[in-house]
Image (cartoon, rainbow, N blue to C red; front, top):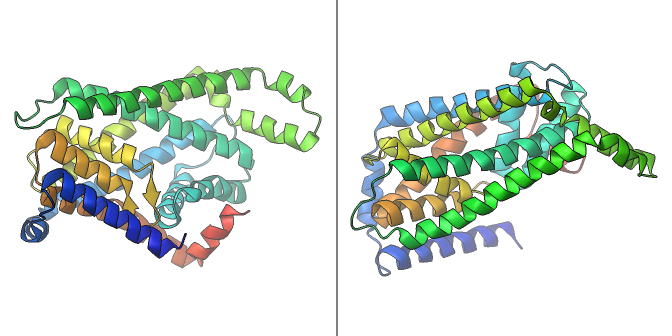
Length: 326
């Protein structure tokens, strides 16, 4: 499907959902634009600082995952992380492959091994999302006019699926790593056996208590900062939400971001709008404005810094696209 047509369809669907769910097909555009005028720049600036802190923490966690393979500096991993997430924002989920390919080319780490660490990161992130979702529910007092029972049941069901999938996958990875020599001995094709062996090497941290412990600690700290960054954005939009309430909205946006349109978003905004309106009875116009501000202040600083680095190094986003097929 043509990309422009896909983007148009997604935006139309989001608009229809917002109009139907909240305003009976009436959208107050004046309130929508007023929401942008009333932002608090100081809180939004704090959210940008927190955004870059999350990338640094991701680089530190990645270093712990890679440590059994090769000691790589945090600065090198931070560069790869910024480039990789910029690729995801610009070219979509296929951009996930940019980080392991980048690491393979720059640090000579086997691709399958670095890809294994990226997969582990994603499952750890899903597990953290579920834990933060559960923690926020213990601390939130929902407005009396909000009807939360059915939406919460839906989100809990999704959370259970995510946590079951994350834990199950981690167990399978541990078993795979522990039995890699036996598995490889059954593979008749040498190249395939080599790829599987390198992939297992990327899971070496599972057998090192210190590396595993550091990875889990880094994941918790990372998601605390992500939640703070989201809270700062909500305060910047003048929403009087507690940290726990902002965390719940973050969870909805994170789940929605699984389905994204490159450079546009879509799922992220829909998840945020849904949570603000359903759980905290915030008007659709303000929720929609907040979703756009949150998306812009999450991706523009990242793409901007990564773009400056790429410009200095003579790298284009076309080059990043070529990494997908490498």
